[in-house]
Each structure stands twice: as structure tokens, then as C-alpha cells.
Length: 246
Length: 230
Image (tube, rainbow over all chains, first blue to last red):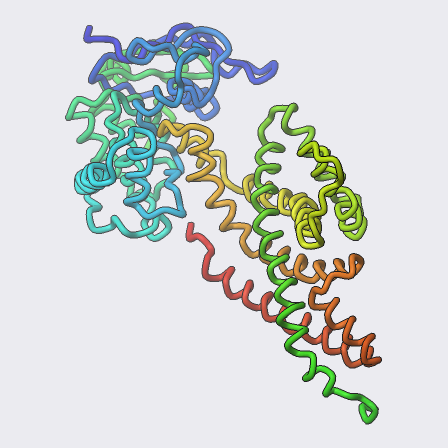
């Protein structure tokens, strides 16, 4: 096994009496792509938001690159700056141009010079194929373009790992591919990625492992071929038969 | 019916009305708005902070200011500010700060309560996803507020903030209780000196109406322009 980049160990979380995560454990190695899937309300989004501390958890431990996320002594903003995150609803900053979206955190958080940040931003816009949109506002772009900008914004921080929270769920079908293409490219370049998605084609193509969650538990954590070939749990079989029906 | 009216009194006192009176009114409005928005935004952040130590005093302050008549505040600060000054500096006598400073303090503190509620609504109108995105990029709380939340909240609320400013502009006329020469004060002094009450108060009403109406039309036009495309 390669170096462990993200280690999720026996994590549980309650909202009042309701348990959303139940002793979840998994490890993600450097350069590994892991897809998390499962029915809605199964806790997948909550779990990946725990990885960069956007959601606090009640029990267990998560370490990213050896740093404990739940430790009160951890400088969370500093750790978050090293983990890229892409959201279902893009969450670009609507009052800033595309380029300002890309450079703001580079300058204010990483302390880069404006010139360096712009150069880096342009390089990444180029990579996601949106070089000519730099001066537009997010509201002037299509959903697929906005999500590619959001990926570029996360990459601009030179993250050690990327978290994707249902990155294509809010997109029209014809825009899903352009976003997935960017993500496939990232995976090929060896980025460590945790991707919450229902895009099983993407999972088959690039994921090394698939984690299946249901009712806050990790029910199955298997290499991709094994998961799609012969899922062991009944719940995963049912889930697959439902979403692969068409 | 206008036969007995002497509209010449207006022409004769224009310079006094606008140069002395309106200047005071506009400066007071501008400074109290600026101060009120800054202080009000701080109060709004305190109320939304989730720390009772900050939220409870801020909420108490807002409720107190909103339950007291403005005229009372103006009076109160006129008589109180000298004593606060004395207490702060340890001087032997109450420090005379003048009409302008005391009314500016009164309006700023009073309006801050209203601006607080406007900014609070503005901040709450920003989705949690925006906060999460800023935090995920490693921004600290002050950076998240300063670069992401407050600029959007301020823009969303700009029409309401300006409308409140128009109300403040009208409310500044209440300084007449301290016999200050604001626009209405100036008009009133001329009216009583020349015995031309109807003409002067009619003219003052027209001026307040024209300025307020024009400003509110301006706000409407502006709100179409500054809306953020989503």
C-alpha cells in the first residue's frame, strides 16, 4: 500500500439523538481515487465534510497528511488551505470575477504575490479550458463552466488532496461530461481524490476503490472491479441494481 | 388665497437656509449614516456570533434603542455627553462638546440599531455554502466576513440601507429641540423673525419632499443596477 494521505478512523457523529455517521473507517493512499456512493441521506456528504473539518464529528479520529482534524490544537484554516473542495452547487463567489475567485485565497491565505497568483490562475483556467472567461462574473457562465472554475479555484491552492461533494448532481446532463473530463485528467495526474458521486461510469474508469455507505455506515469498501463485479452486501447489490437499471 | 403670501421671504433667506441649514443637515446625515453602518455591522456580527457574551449585549442594545423615542435620545445625549466626557478624561467640569457632536453621537448610536437589523438580514441572506467555500479555501473568520460575506450582504441590502438613510435625513430635523440651525431650524427662525410661518414651513416641506423623493427614485434605479447576477 502507498503512503496513507487521509485516514478516517471509527468516526461517529450525532445530530442530537440522530446518528448520521456510525463508526466509519477508511484510508486513502497518496494518489488514490476513492468514490463514495450510497442512497441519499446515507451520510456520504457529511463524511467528506468531516475530512476538512467543515463538519465537526463526535467520536473517532481523522488525520490528513499526519495532522489530526479533530484536535482542537490543529490550525484548521491552515489545514483546509491544503485540501481542495468542490461543492454540489459550485459556491463560486458571485460578487467577484472568475479571476478574483481564483486569486483571492492564494493572495490572502497563502500570501502569494498578485502576479504569481494571476499567473497560476491563468494556467489553471487554461487547464479547465476557460482561459477566455477570466474577466466574467460567475453568473454569466453555464453550470458546467462554473463547476470547472470551482475546480480550478481549489487547484490554485496546490492542494495535497481534493474532495468532491456530488460535483455533477446540480448539472444538466450535457454539462456533466465536461466536468468529469477535468476530474479524470486530475486523477490521471496522480491527485489524491475522494469523490462523492452517483456517476458509476466515472467510478469504473478512474476509482481504485469504491466505498458504499448506507444509514451512516460504511457497508462496503472494495476495489472497484470487485465492487461492480460481485458486491458482497445485499444493500450494495440493491443500490447498484437501482441506479444501473437504465 | 396666496394673495397675502410673501414668497420673497424665501428668496431673501435662501443663502441662510441652504448654506447654514442644509449643509448642517447633510453633513449630519452623512456622518451619522457612515457611523451607524459601521457600528451597526459590528452589532450584527455580535448578534450572529453565537457567543452569548457578545450576542446578548448587542441584542439588548438594539431592543433598547428601538424602544426609545429619538427625540429623547437627542435630549439625553445633549445633556449626557458632557458628563461622559468628564468621566472619561477625569476633568473637573463637564466637557462642552457642542450641539453638533452631541447630536452626531445620538444619531449614530440610535441609527446603528436599525442598521444592525438591516445588516443582520443581509448577512443571513448569504447561503451557508458560501461560508463553507470560503472556509474550505483556508480563510479565517475575519477574511470570510471581510471578503465574502459582508460585501455580498452590503450589496444585497444597499437599497434598504439607502432608504433608511432617507429616513435619517428627515429625522435629523428633530434637532430643532436643541434649537440647532439645521434646514428646518433655519426655516423656522426666519419664519418667526419675519412672521411668515406658512410660507417658510410650506417651502421647507417642499424641499424635504423633493430631496427625499428624488433620492428614493435614485435608490430604485440603483437597485436594478447593482443586483448581483446569480
